[in-house]
Length: 94
Image (cartoon, rainbow, N blue to C red; front, side):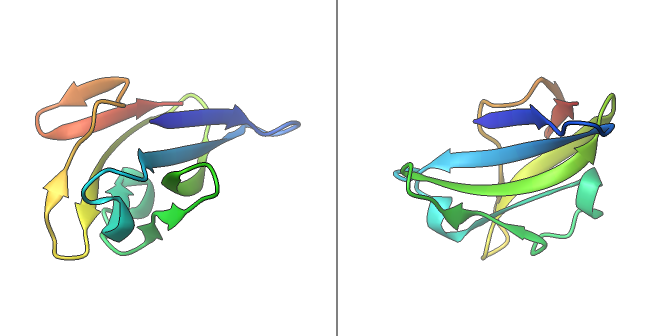
């Protein structure tokens, strides 16, 4: 699931990429995309108190980013949280 929160007084938005705690890859997953140059180790999902694993990134408003989730072992996957899809990539609209 994706959560978007506008940052007051700026042209940016905080985006939380989250997987439920019981997702088979959640404990060992990262999110990678155009916002971090597809760096598969840049944004690790961290265990949260709300029974999810998530990573939070700050992005520019009004942009289009492609992304996917990836495991520590290099297995790329998607979940049904995208605004759109482009081939194998998920699309996030800010």
